[in-house]
Length: 254
Ligand SMILES: [Zn+2]
Ligand SMILES: [Zn+2]
Image: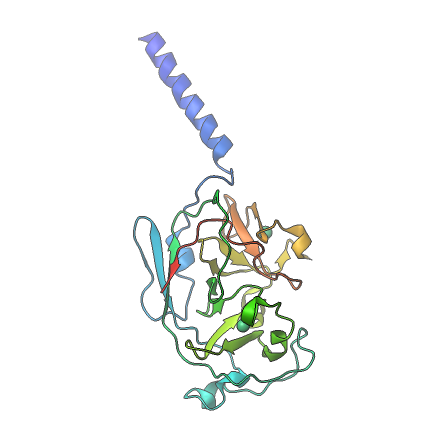
């Protein structure tokens, strides 16, 4: 009996050590508390989850003013002319698209984990910000660098896209409205692989892409994830939000 008890204690000790060792391992899957998902607003239906996925429908309507609300049903309350304040814009050019309401379903992994295969991002939405506005990658039309398109970003650093999804407003870079409201070091949304996105500041200093890995993120703990989590950061230098692709396996967009 004594030996059995000793065996049991050894077993328990071994398992707790193992848990401690792997508890902050970035290869492990991470369960994100549901209340973190519930911080996303600008949704068209309730956020829900099953065992493997979280389902978030976003409306893509910015909750801040924009020159791209001109001539829309929201013009009276949300139209503001470009005010010249965007530091990335050298010569503002209003593009011909105007904001329209969308209904984009993001299905993202509930237990995001590092992928063993390469998962490059596609054109179009690659994630979403807290206000329901999609994030896009570092490329403009035709897979070209954003250099020209940046001049059509409004004072909140977004613009609407042309084409069949006409008027889908999105951010390729720091969403100034959200960082002004929540802080430049705040949790700001998710990419499609279920890993969170943070602003450009961390522990009082401003990050650049050189502080991050090839996916444009890194792993450590912060106030929202005290046990540590892999996360992306927005930076002022290219590629701004994502590097060579998703760190984890992406979910789907409909
Ligand atoms: Zn764009
Ligand atoms: Zn960080």
